[in-house]
Each structure stands twice: as C-alpha cells, then as structure tokens.
Length: 178
Ligand SMILES: [Zn+2]
Image (cartoon, rainbow, N blue to C red; front, side, top):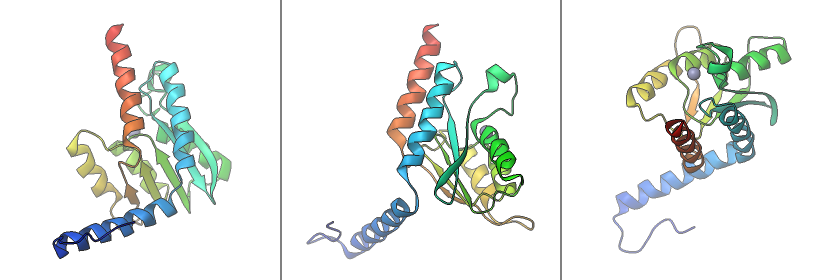
C-alpha cells in the first residue's frame, strides 16, 4: 500500500496515513461475513414486503441471533431488525446484558434501537449505511456516548454502502410500481 506520494503536502499525507491505519484496524476487528448474514435477513424482509433491514448479533466470533424488520407483518412499531435480534439474543443468553456482543446492521439504527443497543450493553455497532437523515445520525451519536448508567458504544458506519443502497432502492422502486 502506497501511503505517501512524492510531492504531496505532508499534512495530507499524514491524514491519509492515519486514515489508512484506522481503516485497516477496523477491517481487522470487524468481519464482512457477518454483514453477508445480516443482508440475508434484510433480503427476507424484502421478500415479505418489509423495508429491507437485517441485523445479526455476534459473541465470541459466533452469530448468536438475527432479526429483520417485521413492522408491517407484526403490526408493531417496535419490530425493527435490531429489536428482534436483541430479544432473541436475550433469550439465548438468558440475560438482558449482552456483554461482549457486537451488532451488524444493514442500515444505521433509529434512536429507539440505538437506545436498546446501549442499554443491552452491546459493545460495537457496525452499520452498512448511514441514515440519510443527518438529525438521526446526531441523535444516535449522542445516545451511544457514555452516560451515568451505561458505557459508551463504539459505532462504525458506511461499511457496506453499495449493497445496502442497492437493496433499499430496489425495495422503494418496487413499492412505487404497485
Ligand atoms: Zn429501529
């Protein structure tokens, strides 16, 4: 990997170098195979005419639960992919504390899910695509920051942008044609 190019301003070179190091570190700690599974569940939502969003929860490098958006089919405003995955993980671990767990989601969480993620003590959130609504991003950043009762959640977004955009665009196109 070529980081510093000849004739380049040293500040830009330093920034690029730092970005590459951080990005490489992130690629090492996260795992794209978990995104593949999250997208499988997003596809299930797509086939059931739900907004295609999927989530998986991982502990010790193993998927312990998954969920996809079921809002329409359950007639429930809380049936988001992340909530479905959290409920299943809690059952599996017989504990509401999802210590040392990470969640992979195909779209940034909404404030409700961000709050549930934080209260469940999930450590890292890996999201494929950031929400187009910038106020959502600010809100969830604030929810994920440290407070008196819960530790901070590490949040990484825009990790699989094309795949998520393609799926969502295809869904909304299909809905418009109905
Ligand atoms: Zn949500």
